[in-house]
Length: 616
Image (tube, rainbow, N blue to C red; front, side):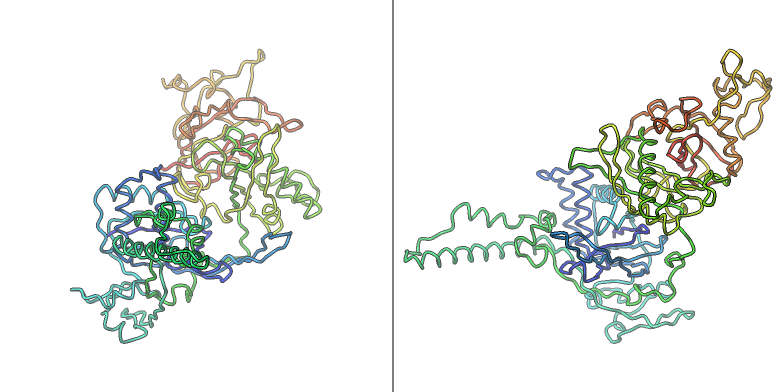
C-alpha cells in the first residue's frame, strides 16, 4: 500500500477538469490520478534532471504500476469559491475570467491511497524524491505547504471507485469516514447497493451520509494502451490511404497500386508514443491539435464521493473571512524580465530592491489616493511628523525562498495591519524599474495573512523562516549600527577593559576576573558596540530575555558564502547615512519561542538586519 498526503496553502486548490472550460466554474475534486501522475512526471524532468532521451527505467515502471490500481481518497472539508477579473484581449477588448477554487482549513490534508500498489526499494526512493520536490498540484496557484510519502494508512476514506462495491473480496466491508463526526465507520457493501444514503453508526452523530457520483480521469494499463494505440494507428493509416485513393480516383488514375509513402508511414507511427509513460508525457496542446477528445492513455472512472464534503455545515473558523482582521503580512512573488535577458537580483542587493519598491508604493499611493498613505512613510496622519509609536509603518523584506542566492520573494509586514487602501496600492504595483542599467523585475501578490499562518522553517513549502516561531534566530542580512559606539580621544573604540563586566551566555553579567574574559572577540567588548546595541533594541521592542547571543561570521545561500561586506548598506544619495559602514551578524537564542519577523538596526524597514528562524 502507498499513500501520499497533500497539504494545500491558504491560496487553495485550483484545477479545471478535463473537457470543461475555465469559465464554467467547475473544479476537479478529487484530483484525478492522471493529474497526480503528470505532476510527478513534470517534477522528474524539471527538478530531478531526467533525460528525455534516456528516462530511468525505474521511473517508467513506477508510473506504469500506478495504472493498475484505482486510488481511494480522504478528502478534507472545503469551501468552493471563485474570483472574477478582466483579462486583456484582442484590440484592447476585455473578457471576464472566472477562477474557481477550493479553500481549506490549513491544518487539514488530502490523503490519496493506493491499496494494491507494491513498489520495490528503488521505486519507493524515487517516489519519495519526486513527492518531496512537488510544489503544487493543479494550476501553479495550488501551492502545496507539504507533500508527504506514507508507507502506511489505517484510517477511513470518503471517496472511492464505484466498482469497489461489486468486487468480491474476503472482507465485504468498507471503512468510511463520516463527514460530520469524522469517525471511521465500518459498513457492509450491500447497504450501499440498496440505499441512497447510510446512517452514521456513531451514537453521538447518527446523521445520514449521502453520496454523489463523479467521473475521475485515470491512466489505463500498459497492455490496454498498446492495444488502443495499435487500433488508432491502424485506423489512421486506413483513413489516409482512403483519402489518397479517392483523390487519385477523381483524376482517373489506377488506385490498385497506391500505398502510403515511407514518410507518411513514419508520421502515422509517431502519432502516439510507443509506451504508456510516453503517452502520459504528451503536452495538452499536442492532444488538442491531433483532435483527441481526451488524453490517449486515460479512461473515465466512476467514483462515489460524500456529497457534503464541499458544503460543510459549520465551516472551520480559519476558513471564515473576518473583515475586522486586517492582514499583517503580504507576500509578493518576484520574477525576472527573462524576455530581455534579465535575472533576479542577488541577496546582496536587498536594500536597493526594498528602496525601489518603497518608491513605487509612494508614487502609486499619490496617484490613487491623492496623498501618500502613512503606512508607507511611518509618519503621523494628522501632523505628518514621524510616528512616536515607532516601527508601525511597513517593513519591506526581500528574501531568498529557494536558497539560490537570489531574491525571489518580498515580504511586507505592518504591525497594525494593512487596510483596504494600502492593500489596493500594493496590488497595483507590478513592475520595479531599477537604476544603473540593472534589469527590471516584476512583482505580484501571492499571499495575505498573519505570521502564524505563513511562517515555517527552511524547506517547508509556501512558508518563510522570517515569519516562523522559534527560540533560535540567525542573521541573514547584516545588522547595521544605529549609533556611534563609544570612542577614546584618539578615535580607538572603548572596550570593556574600561569596565568590569561583559555580557555572556544566559544574558548574565560575567566579571572580568572569572577567567573566560578573553574568549570574547574584541568588538564584543566594545562599549555600546554591535552586541550592546542589538540587546538594547531587543529590550526596547519588548522581546523576551536572551539566553545566548553569538557572533555570526557570514550569510550562506546556494552553497556560497556572502560576507557582510558584500551587501549594499545604504539606500542612495540624500538618504540617512550610516554611523559605521560595517555589517555584523548574530545567532540569538531566546529563553522562549518568539514569532517573526525579527529585523533590527539601521535599514531594518528596508531588509537590513533580518533574522531567520532555525529549529531548536
